[in-house]
Length: 408
Image (cartoon, rainbow, N blue to C red; front, side, top):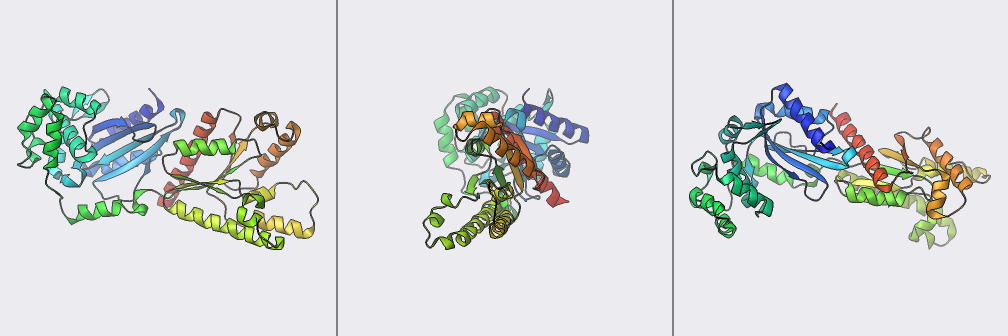
């Protein structure tokens, strides 16, 4: 059993202990990310209990629509470096075109069957649910779904509870016969004749509209600063996080090198470069707040905290004041990660400076942890995959903690 399965099994056990009625409607791979996705049907009265048990396992809700008929939750299974998404439904819905009544949804829970540690729908319910999901939600029947539908069709009947919700021009007998014959083209043609829209009222229509708004689509993101000497692997880790993080990732340079900012580098006279550079840093920080509000993860490549490092030369009072100003210019990020890599390893990676110099820089960065709030040390000497998974896990823990603190 991998970590993702262990996480869901822990949740199933919690549901059983709490006396929640539940049923796994769908279980498959998570689209666009490594992990799995589950659709779980629960009774409306059990929803709060089910969601509290998800929060206890560090799942994060993906919207604020606490009263909707569907609410999606996400967790990161760190040892497996994969995501688990659980979609909690209190009513069967198939896109905007078909919303089942509470009585139909309750009937599916009443007829559920237990298979090992998991409750599954009755085979007849499972057939019609999968068929409607393919035709009205995904819009296609893939090879895996075809094989599953064929196996379920032997137990399906055209006058079952879910078949009864079909409109008159969607004859259940024809759908069942086409499935048993493997006539997928006929099923697609029948699906095209579905009425333009079926809803249960203005509340569901309003919920769908709100669900498309950015503020309702994702929880707020985080601002994360990544610190470490040259050769610590910051760029490699940023790329790993961009590939594996569930939400979009943006990267902004927030170090103290004016040469890294073309606008400042070309500016004349040189006396203007310092003030303009500070304005650029603030502009980047404000842009990060916008990304954060839209649910994106912002990674700061370095941060103004570099000004807290011991200077390599004696500073004049003016230079010392300027350095202090830069160190305290911006608010602290939500999380600061310091990559810890031995000097000899950094030298082997880039061949710059010398191991002794890099080791001294390493110790300076490690000492920053005592001066910076929300700072954590990350062992950066491991493989990029292991470090990237560790960084994603730390970011996710901080995001879940921020959500829980906001609720209290």
